[in-house]
Length: 178
Image (cartoon, rainbow, N blue to C red):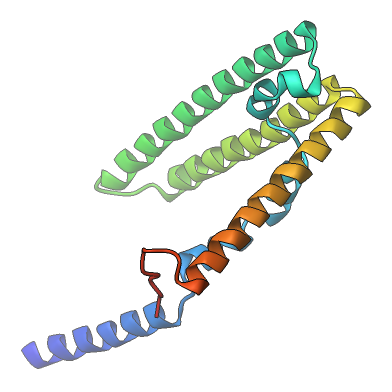
């Protein structure tokens, strides 16, 4: 009896380690999930960034007020939705702790969480599109040029930092991953 148990556990460990070694790192798996959504968001403008650059892009006071109101409404929606997801998660936990797990209830709770998360993504895109619709074409062009300039500055700083580390000017030792 003990030999069978040890044999079964050894087989399970082999499968477990095999699946761990065979699986992709989490960062690689997550890199591709939601890729299209991130591409859309990258081309849209977060309100926080616009409010920081309001003088540079020439936002009017009415535009600033509209953006701030939209930002507050969006934050309120996110807080409420996140709280609902957590509450449903607690309901699901109590359902799993029950003596007999009701599969139908668990599946319905999972569907509710998924629908709330979908609503969050949809509202994020709508929020970003609404913020962009407030801006004029001239302001959008100004933002694009500012973004390009900042991106170029970052790239040149990275290149200069890389050249310093290659030449031995940097006192910190570089760490390499194996």
